[in-house]
Length: 269
View 1 (cartoon, rainbow, N blue to C red):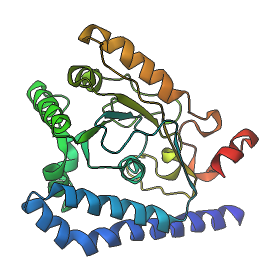
View 2 (cartoon, helix red, strand yellow):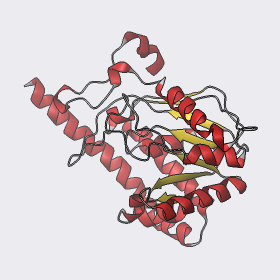
View 3 (tube, rainbow, N blue to C red):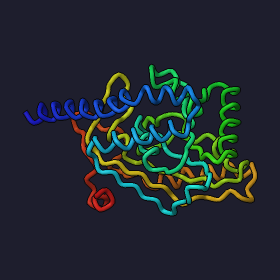
View 4 (cartoon, helix red, strand yellow):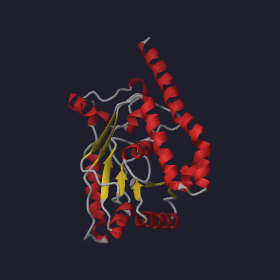
């Protein structure tokens, strides 16, 4: 009986969360479409940020955002974050101020209705194609030069073991930060996969705390491209330092639990 009630609760919450994700998009779609057609990307980004903040609030989950050394909004930089869930972009939009550019996989631009809007406002890349990778780096460099910070998922894909292991980082974001001479800011999101994991053939949404840690910016002044690998490894270790052992990986649906470690209750309160 307990298992049945848990299953029904999960189904109801999945429906609730999905509804409050879809409804704001449907209501704002005409405006988003118009802004994308008119190349009003700053306003479009504000709409996307508002959509993200509203949806997360309606999900009713506690959200902890820690900014260890906040940068002034006028400071252009490269943000790099781990990738463990489809809600990563939403939490980043909520947490990072200013006019952002996002580097995402080209498949996002193929999503019905929303895809063309994302593809027009942000940078998409086919990481299997050298020409596409080159174009995305040029676009990202131009974005930084125009004063628009750029967000990367250096793993290039959602980790198969989120919260436990990250896919080896690609070097593009680090080479870009060094070439542009802007700080690089590591971001840890250790719990997103608990809320919405990447499970093939299944939509799972579970009530779970969310947490984002924005680490201290790392200056790149004086670094050369020969330092990109060391910088990449340093950022990898910083991001992973916030992973929680009890929240590692995707638990079985029948045993879904949010982290209970006493030492982390204060962090997640």
